[in-house]
Amino acid sequence: MGSVVLAAGVLVAGLVMTVVVGRRLRDRAAAVARLGEPDVAPPDRDADFDRPGFADARPFARRYYWPPWVAGLAVGAIVFFALHPRVVYVIVPVVMVGLLGNELDRLRVARRVAKIETQLGDAIDLMVGALRAGAGATAALDAAASEVRWPLRPQLAEVVGRIRLGDDPQAVLRDLTRRVPLENVVLFVSALSVHWEVGGSLAGTLATVGKAIRDRTELGRRIQSLTAQSRASVGAVLLATYFIAAVIWRNNPDRMVAFLSSQVGSWLVGLGVLMQVVGVVWTTAASRVRY
Image 1 (cartoon, rainbow, N blue to C red):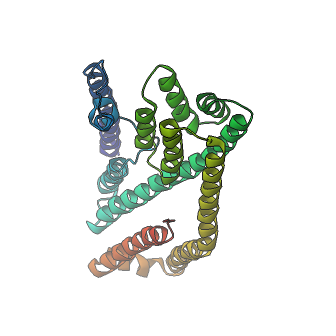
Image 2 (image 1 turned 45 degrees about the vertical axis):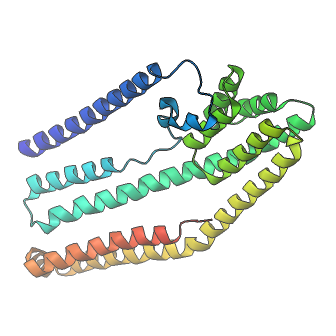
């Protein structure tokens, strides 16, 4: 028992130190890049894509691919030191935790994307109202940034702040599409860029863009509702499988233990669990909304 606790403590400590060191190195690299940024903006607007500040722009939602696999290795190590089972019973938790953890992280990012797209539609409505009341583009953008919530609020606040400090609006808007690489945001930025480039009435254009964004969001919600039944069916089949296994274990535990302890039985069980995990990932990927 002591070796299991020691192994788990070492793994957790290593994971925490890796995260801390990684964040410090990332912050240090960002600071060095900003210090090396030139004081005078280059005359060519396309050169904004090559400057360090633009390359290091942090997205509003990041995918973390390696922590689930680190957690899977930790679970596999705990299972190995605690139970000393067959190799397949160590491999299965590693793969299962890694794949399901990545899927949960993707769902987290998808939920944040849906939230920021909904907030973008509300922000555009606020901007349209402010523009029709006589406000300028920057004032309307500031009013929208002050009303919306996280995660869209800091993105719009940075755009307004940099424009008021004298940065090129085209470069600022391109940085926004870098941090928030969504098609709806690109559509919104395109409308603002055209207005800052050639002028004209912005309220009507933004009203059309807002309607298009709301239609796309509504389409995505309908697709999610139509595929909810298939996802529920997959979950019911998985629960039924484990329920049947529990019933067999309760009725005849000796045969179940003998089956799980045999080489053929362990590989069959491991393959079945892995196929279930792959099926869950495949089902969620098939029901993903793509415009």
